[in-house]
Length: 150
Image 1: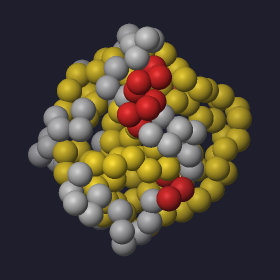
Image 2: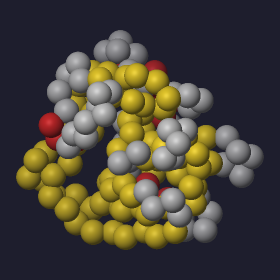
Image 3: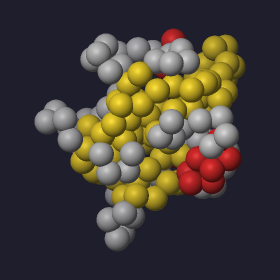
Image 4: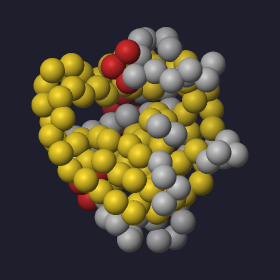
């Protein structure tokens, strides 16, 4: 949250403000609505651990920003992230966004999933940058489709 509190993703409400990443800078963002949610639904989650010891869990079709071989941000489904190839964008202890290599991936079924939509289309979960979109092959397309709602 913008005031420094941590909030479980399932407890976010429309209008809540928090820090997000616009691809270049950290920015203040706002939750618009919950795109998908099920407190008791089961889903397969991918949990990533980075070299900087950041962790995030999300479904396989959820888009993750990773650093491309040319140093730019690309968005790929979580199920395509690979150890040794991909680096995630994380918030360092110094308060800046850095890239950190993925060093471990675990896959497990968990109960409960939530997909908040923000103005920027991104959200920081456990200080790891994630897209708000899943089941779509392009983060930019997700932003375009949701433009009327924003």
